[in-house]
Amino acid sequence: MEGKKILILGGSGFLGNAIYKELCNYYDTYGTYFSARRSFENNQQFYRYDLEQDDVFEILEKVRPQIIISALRGNFASQILAHQHIVEYLMTNKCTLYFLSSANVFDAYRKYPSYEYDKTLSESIYGRLKIKIENMLMRIPQEKMGILRLPMVFGNSSPRIKEIKKNIWENEPVEVFPNLVLNVTNDDKLTQQIHYLINRNRKGIFHLGSKDLVHHEDFIKETISRIGNFNPIYKRVFTSNEERYLAVLPRDNKLPKNLQVGYQEIIDHHISK
Image (cartoon, rainbow, N blue to C red; front, side, top):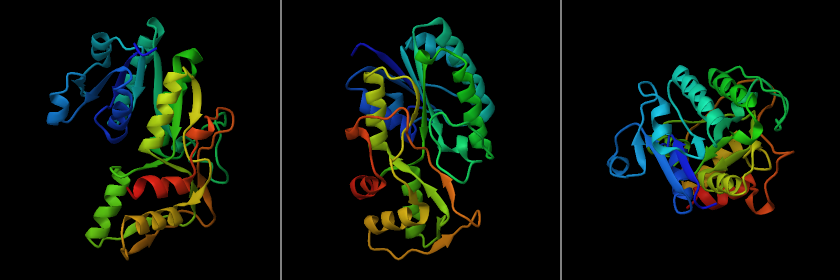
């Protein structure tokens, strides 16, 4: 089991790098980076990969992974092409893809949370991109793929928390969505869950968010109160008159109790570190 070779596409980003750090002590783990940072250039396990210029086949042929984790970001057309090539590789090699998708694949449904086998429908360009790639994966044998749908991801070094801190320090308003009901996660919990899925060889569709829901405004305000004693300016953004849900809850493919998380734990344990 421990001999598995893993390639993380987008391994230098916030989530990709968190996953790399979680897995690299257990598996032969490789990653790709795009913007040159010394730490990645000098790491023998990392390959430079430009989504828009390079063919992902070249990296796959070099690494020959048994597991690919796609945390790619960037040009949408290039992402689609890269995933078409990954699917071709999957079909001719003993290999599984875990694809980091998003709650946004359901953002057209506002009235209730979404579960694993609900029909996807999105009003956003980002959500539609994720659906397009998910649909590619739905057409291949299930043992070749895992679709991991994520809610908003927080954590001390997450872009969301960094932006909130920056806004507070620069006396800029922090945007909150009072009508938005969501579930959340953070990098620590998410990487443990992904490790478990790989370790147990779990495939299919997984909703990797907190098991309970919270209003965006309440979550952000409580989070800020943990960061420090600030009195920020809030900009309350109403995208609809009634409550709208953007939440991916697990029903069919639940994880063990110790890997389930509540939103309060995300606030208590991780953001205030």
